[in-house]
Image 1 (cartoon, rainbow, N blue to C red):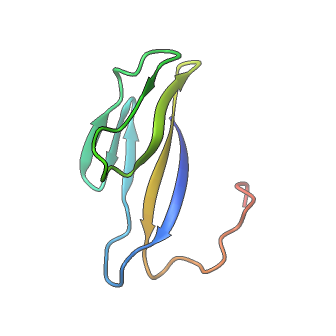
Image 2: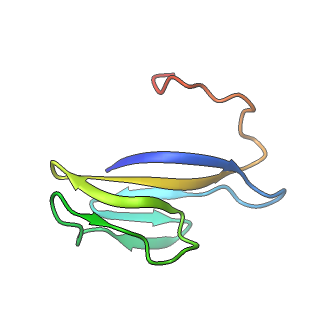
Length: 86
C-alpha cells in the first residue's frame, strides 16, 4: 500500500492519528477500511465526507495508492524534512 500523508496539527490534547496496514485493510484510529474491492486500474472514492481518506483510492500494478489526512500531536517537530529518505 502506498500512502501519501497530509499532516495537520491536531487540537490541543487530541490524540495523534494511528494507522496500521494488513494486506488491503487499513486501520485508521481503530476503524477498519477494507479496500480489497478496488479493482486493478480502478478507483474508489470515500463515501463519508468526514473520512480521513483524501481523493480517490486507486490500484496500480497491484498496489493500492491513497491519500490520508493525519493529525499530529504536540510532540511533532515544527520543521518536518522534505526528503523522505531522512
